[in-house]
Length: 236
Picture (cartoon, one colour):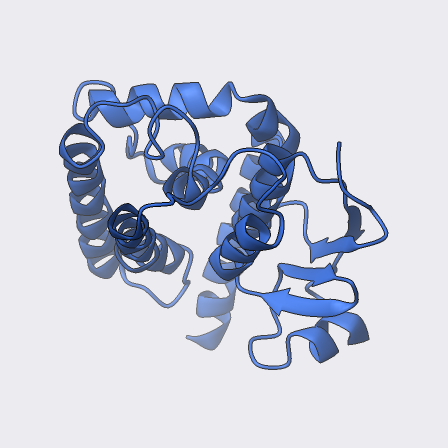
């Protein structure tokens, strides 16, 4: 891979879908980087100092300077390494704004509700409502892929862009969530375009390199869900 490993260092966890987004961008750009695994149960001083606001991964260090928030980092990688690999954001200002709109949509309408599924404090009725929100967002994304992106293989067109990264970083967790909650989020019958997109994305070399192992994520998700349920039982 191109680039200097001494310049780029990624602080993340193996299971983080947000860390996967940054890995995807780095691999798509062909950039080498050093990887540091963080223990979120015993957060390092490096994490606390480099992301004092949220105290979360991922954090990317470039020439010693820290950057936080996955899609902010993806934007930075695209701009800072414009000559490396394919562009991740369109050059046209309008198309770039449209792409950023859909990234924001994914964050608020898909990621936000999806994270709530793992909250132990949520009742069964509340989780059912959250599932409806996610499925509604999925249907809207299907329409966006058909209309806004004109039937291209990726949200970025013929190649992968920032919208693909925003959604693609979540793919393994989405699959694991299907098993956990018994809901088909990527259904070939209900959302054929999105389902086909997911298959194409998962087949990319960058995806194979950046995304975590499904079985390992599923095992972790089951433990996480059990721990959340146990915490609620202990409080009652």
